Image 1 (tube, helix red, strand yellow):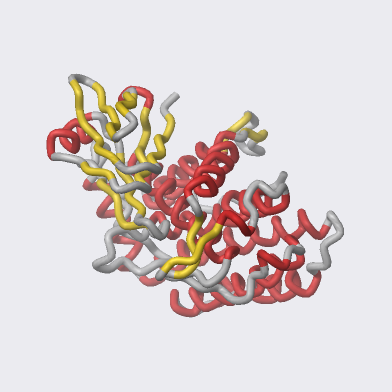
Image 2: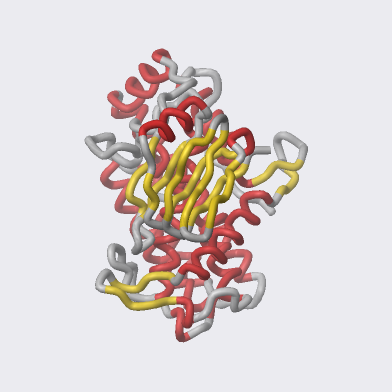
Length: 330
């Protein structure tokens, strides 16, 4: 079973014979190629052309983050499953306003349903979230009536605004008060965790797209433009509430991350290295968690669930089966 590798310290990634290793002042650590799905780089890491050629052959993606935990970009090897037919189908569904609207509305609906699922989970545990839930339900009723994607994006944004109000009721910790959504730089501890988690799910979805025939540059809710990837942002909307947000609530609720795990920098509030490691470890635990899938009738992991979502999208694009987003039912 292949797994991701996370590198937090600074050093150099190199090829040695038919494997790769990470080298720094503390020595060398070998990374078995056959067991590696992707590499997340948080430290100051040097690579050379020989190394990049080798991971291209091994079909390993490299994701880069800077000191402030911002996603910088990915080394996306030559697509080994590229399909001209699928690219044409993706473009067709983007250029046709009705077809694009259909997919974009399903992504927003999936996000809304999964947000409500998370809220119900905490409502059932005594949290007073009725006002937030009602606000989101009212917005949901307008999704399929939207006339264009910009209107959909506005509903998605307003849904998130309501949802984020619930975080303070769910967490009940003054040191993790939400305030308002702030990005680049995040202005408080909770916003820092949300930004870091969102960056992680964007790259995880991108890695799963690489294993399909889909092209990540053609999204539907997020406009396709000169920005490199957008399809991963679309799919991530569905999974943020049930993967990233649940991880954040667990980390804070169990005091696995506290106010002492943050530091101020010139770019706002950043996570300390140990806290990043704790977050990534809990996220990997979540992605490996399996549950009984109601359609497949067998245990499926959350990481596998993301891939299944992409396969559903492929079937929709080929006209085999209408796409409906995954909605949690546990």
